Length: 592
Image (cartoon, rainbow, N blue to C red):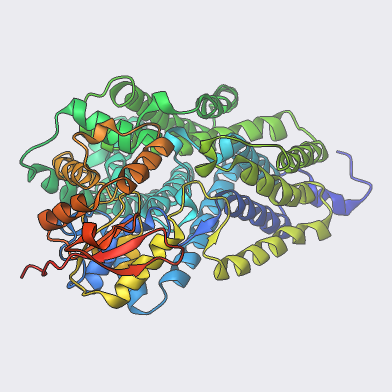
C-alpha cells in the first residue's frame, strides 16, 4: 500500500471511518450552523402561543380561568408543560428554552453523525448528507414538517430529535438506550407516543425472527425494554383516549376534514395543497438510497436502517391513502403521520451521501467546489425580485441567502481539508449563539408574525385590567393570551385537537366574525388570514356590543375607532401606538 508524500494528509482521507477530533468537531459545528441558520431561532412566537399557555395556568391557577381554549380543551403536552413551569418558577424561561433548543440541535446532529458512521461513512459523508437534506426544500418533509419546527424549543422538536437518537441506538443494537429515547419522544408528544407502539411491535418481530420463536418476546429482558419504552408513551395515549371518550358529540367526518384539515391546517393535512417541489424533494433521494441499501444488505446496521426507512414510508402511504386521498378517520388525520417523513428523508440523504463519497469516492475538493457554487447562486438569488403574497409565509430569498452565504461556506472550508479552516465553523456558531441570546427572533420566519401593535395592547392589558377579564380579540391574533395572561373568546391559531371540541371553536369563530359558516373563509391560508382581518375590521360597533354580552366579555379590541354614540355602552380606554387597534371597556361585570 502506498504511503502519502505528506504523512499529515493521511489523517484527512475522506473515506476513513475514524476522523481526527478537530475534523469531527468542525463537522458538527457546520451541522449546527446549517440548522440554526436555515431554521433560525425564536422565542414566544407561533406555536409558543399555544404550548406555553398550560404552564401559565399551572404556575398560577387563577389565570385564564375564563379562557375556553386553555381551560376546556385537551392539553396533552404534559412533560413540556412541567418543564416550562419549572423554568418559569426560577426565572430562566427564555434562557432555558434557548439552551434547550441549541442542545436539541446538537443532539440531533450527534445522532446524525453517529448513524452515518454506523453505516460506514465519516465526517465528510455526514456533511454531504446534511447538505443534501437541507438543499432539498430547505429540510422540509411532507406536511411541511421539519426537525426543528418554527425554530423554537417545542415538544415536537424534542420528540423528533429523540426519535433520530433512538434510530441511532437501534442501529447500534443498544436496546436499552433506544427504549429510553423512544420513551422520551413519546412522553413529549402524543403522535410519537402512538408510533412508539408501532416501532416496538417491529422490534418484537425482529426479536422473534432472531431467536426463531415467539417465546423470545416473553423473556425478562425484552419485557423490561418494552416497559421502559412504552409505559411513558402509554400514559400519554391513555390521557388522550380518555379525553376522546368523554366527548359527547363529534363533527361529521366531512365537516371535520373541511374545517380542521383543509381550512385550519392545509399545510399539514391537505396533500393536494402542497407545492410539487415538496413531493419531488422528498422522493428524489429514495431511489439512490435503495441502491445503497441493496449494496450493503448483508450489514446488520444497513438492514436496521432500511427497516426504519421502510416503516416510515409505510406510514406515509397510510397517511396518503387514509388521510390524504381519502379521509377515513379524524383520529388518523390527527396522528400526523406526515411528520415522520423527515426521518426517512434524513436516512435516505445519509445513504445517498455514502454512495457518492464512500462508494463512488467523489473527491472532497470537488464537493466543496459544488457547494461554493450553490452558495454563490444562493447569494445571487437575494438580489432577484420575489413577488406574491406567499412572501408573508416563506421568504425564499432570505432562506437561500443565509444558507448560501454562511453554512455552505463553512462546510466548504472543512471539505478543503486545511486544518486552520476547521476553526471557522465554531467561530461562526459562537457568534450566532451570542447574537441569538440577545435577539429572540433570529433567522428566516416561516410563519407570519403577530402585529406588534396587538402585542403592545396585550402587554398593556396585562398591567391595566383585572386578572379574570375576558377579551374579544381579532381572531387572526395568536399571542394575546400568552402576552397578556388574560382570557380571550376565540383565536384562529388556538384550535382544539379533538373532533368533539371543534364545534364550540367553530361557533365562537363564526359568532365573533359575524358569519354563518367559518368554512366560507377564503383559501389558501394567507388568504384566510387576510379574510379574517378584513371581516373583523368591517364589523359595526353594535356587533361587538352583542358579542360581548353573549360571552360576558369585559373588553373588546377593535380595528376601528367608533364614534361615541355608536360605541355606547362601550367606552374607549386605550389606543395602540399607531392608532390601528383600540381597546374598549364593555361595562359588563365579571360573572362570579
